[in-house]
Structure formats: C-alpha cells, structure tokens
Image (cartoon, helix red, strand yellow):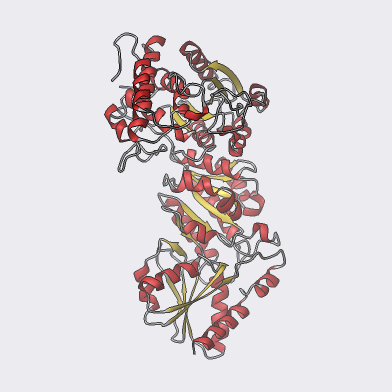
Length: 310
Length: 297
C-alpha cells in the first residue's frame, strides 16, 4: 500500500522530467505533501513560495498565463479556506490551468486536529464555476487522476488523503472523467462513496455480505463534472441510496446525490458522513470509530438505515 | 506593427491624451449611472504614460506573447484602464459607453477573457502583484525579455496578500517586475482626519514610511509626481533600466491626487465613486479641453 501523497510526489517528479510546463509551487510543506520528491528528482520544476498560500495561488495563475501548468503543494485547508478568494478570482474565473493538489484532506491528517481537517472542501469547490473536482479512492486512481489532470486545459481540484488505504483498483485502472465506477453489484442496497472513504465503504460492504446483505457499491471519483445520466443508469431501479463520505454531510457527495434525487431520481437518500461539528486531534482508528467512518461503523449505519426503511 | 516603445509623443501630447481619457471616464460613468471616478482619475496619467510611451504593446495583436504585461490590481478603477485602452486602439472609443451594460466586453472589473488588452482579471483587492510576480517569474524562466507592470492603490496595500508578494518577489530576483503605487492619499471612506475640510480623511499610508519599508524589503524604490509626465517617464525609464541588471524588483511610488483634473472631484474622498449631474458634466467638459483643438466631445 502506498499513500496518495507519495504517489503524487513520484508522479509529478516523473511528469516534470518530460513536460517543461509542469512546475510545483510549495507553501513550505514539501516534506508533508511529498513535493520534496519533486525537489529532489526534478529540482528545476520545484518552486518554493514560502508560507504564503494566497501568493502561491496568484503566482501560479501568473505563470499559467505564460503556458505553465502549475501544481500547488500544501494542506487542503490552506487552499480551500485561506486562499479561497484567490482560487475563485484568479483560477476559477479565468479558467487558468492550475492544479490544486489538496493534501491531508478529510478527517485524517496525522493528528493535527480540527484546524487542519478539511471536511468542507467538496461543498466549497463544487459550487465554483469552471472547477473540476476529483477525489481518488486509492494510490492507483490517484496516479491515473494526476496524469489526466496534467493534460486537462482548465482548473482542477484534487482531494488527496494523507495515509494509505487498502486499494480498490490496480495498476491497470483507467480514469474516465465524469463517470461513476461500479465496484460491487448487489440487489439489497445501493451505496455511493468517494475518495478514500470508498476503500472503507468497500470493507463495510464485505461486512454486510457476511450478514447476507448484498450491496451495490458505486464509486464517484468525479464530483464535478458528473455524468448524471450514467449515474442514474448505474443506480437503476434502486429505491434507497446511501452515500458515504469523509466530509461534512452538508453539501458534499451526499448533497450532490440528494440534489440529483430531488430533480431526476426515484430513490430516497441517506447520507453517511461527518456531523456538522468540529472534530479533534487523535489517532486515525480513534477518529474513524468516534466519527462513524470506520468500516464497522459505516456497516452499522447502513444496517440502521435499512431497518428504518423496512 | 511590431512591438516597440512609442516614443514620438511629447509630454504635451501625452497630457492631452490623459485629458481626453479623463473626459471618457466621467462621461462613461455618468452615462452608465454607476462607477468609480476618483481612482481612475488619479491613475490616468500614469496609465497613459505606460500605454502611449513605455510599454511594448501592439493593440492589433493584444495576445502577442512578447508584449509587456500590465495588471490593474485596483480593479474597481477599470474604466480608467478601458478609456486608455480604447484611445490606444484596442477597441472602439464608442464601445466605452457599453461599460457595465448587459453583454458588454467592458465589465465593472477587468476580465481578461473578455476585453482585448487586459492581461489579468482583477476585482478582489491585493491580488494583482502576485499575478504579476508569477508572470515575471515565468518570463525569467522562459528567457523572455518583456517587462511586467502592476498598479495598486495606496488603500489596497492594506491587504495582507500584497505583502506576501513584496516579501517573495525579491527572492526570485524579479527585476523585470515593476509595481506602481497610485498614492492618492484617499480610499473609499477610511479614517477621519479631523480637519473639517473636504480633503477630510487621513491618508491610508500616512503613518508608514513607504520608501524605507519597501527598500527594506529589498525593492528598488522610485518616488515620482504621478501627474507630471516628465517625472513619470523618467521614473518608468529608471525602473526598466533595472531589468536584467539589479536583481531586484522596482516600486514606483506615484504621488497623485484622487479625482485629479476635474475641479469638483479633485481631492475629495466623496468622489471615490459617483455620478455627475448634467451641470457637473458640463463643468468637466469645459475643464477637460484639448489645448489645441478644443473640446473632446
């Protein structure tokens, strides 16, 4: 198992060797985001900006107007929150090909706690015109998405997790933007998940299978754009869809699916995700259990939702 | 036309162009019944000097990759930039009257995707210098010779992000970057000066020794009278002389008067934005005469 940040550093270092448009701008977190791999292997492509995320976004935009395809290296919170206005004004509005690589997204950030837990990013970024919003499930999808984003002619936001998860894909995986990926077929309940929470939801589905509950599991790496017709077709005639995400239940994947259900779906939606409250600093296992995102807790929530719906 | 500095205009010619640009600002804002006046009028002489003398640009080829870049970071002064771009030939002068109208290429704040000659969108204060530093850094890495100019207001530099870039730019040796501060001494409302006259607001940066501060951050510092074309041209020339030589970015502190050039807008914060009455418009028309040919409109 390999962490997505490791994959990000290694892939960018490779891309920078062959594509002179690739530069990585770092707000002094390179040893955490693993932009240090780029600094070591492709030093010509590494630019230290300093602890100044707003200036990092502005300079990335400026460089993009001369043909560069800049990648931003820092924690997600400092991009989607601290530098939000700069992303909105200079990247989203202008369609600049800046790649926003949000490291340490979600609940698990190496015990840095609530100040560093970006659990609102999907809600914020998917509301922004022109923005592509992607959340890879594992190391293989992360690599595929990075290579796709490198060629994309527009702004891209990618949600990366700090720590490795059990892969759901392998090296043969090909990323197709906007498309849902059906990981498990099953008649009893439809689960939709995104990002690395898909790995834990996959494990939850295995726990349910042991109880005789056969779940369909759909992974959505592409929060935006999303082929809604393809999603509805994959959901089929399911009457109940449960979303699972490492994000606030407000406005993220659950919000997205509820919006679709309200306008085009014939199913009801249960949203599993983080409560509307601040979390805390603690080891991963503790956080996943307390805040309901471990495979066991997700399986419990699904059983409860099934019981309620009869 | 190739990219070359326009240097056949006298300072008197430039002053006349600036007077017409001033007229276009007040005429357009009055026609649109909305817009900023004070900031555009304090900046306009320095803008005219850039586009009619200093910058290597070609209005017929606004995307020429080797053109000098300009970013109006104080984006609310867009009508000042539009007036100068129109007079310079980027689009018809008559199009100015579409300013702030539906479907117009001339938005309330500059939009690089819509307006020929606009090198960066702006509208949230404090961001333009950073964008310019990115352009200047990219130019250095690509071996391009062009110069990048950014204009901010003195109220604008209250924004923290400006200082992120002021710290960062010297690190990259961006001597191909020049920041012009339109130091007109007033912002939209600001702090009361307690003087009781119409210039009754305290200066945004009045308590800051800007030349010392900016020099201390590692910038070349040049102070000019932002309404005196001899001074402006000399300052611009000195700034460009640093390119490829000094290893430091340059800041030009342009001492200006908000609303300059029209009697009732000059020196008062109350004309940060505003719409002239028919009588005021006539006053402006009479004051903004071409010294040789009479009125502009």
